[in-house]
Image (cartoon, rainbow, N blue to C red; front, side):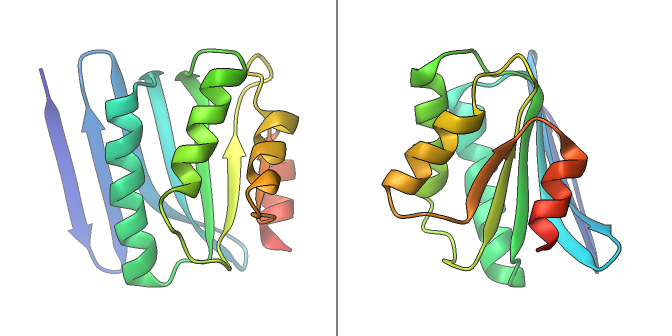
Length: 144
């Protein structure tokens, strides 16, 4: 069963997709002078869900000139292991996002994304992607 909620109220943008066992929301946020788009996943993080969320956020980023983004999988069942982390990062990189976009990949302490995610991105020439398990630390880096 699918439920959709879309709210395009300028200057705010919110899109939420809920499926039987998974969901994501895309929403602009601010913290002081920092303005960014926050993509949050909950439930089982499937390939279908990631692709849909990544495509919607890509469109929003390009349309609105967004320079900062947080992909938050800390509340999702993203699976564990190197292969799943590799897939998430390579999907992000395949979106052809602006080269000046800073991206935080936020995971929980139980998810093995931190150093490996950065290495995958770095090996593909992207230095503006960093993985964190602490949201405050992530926002400090994003604000630099």
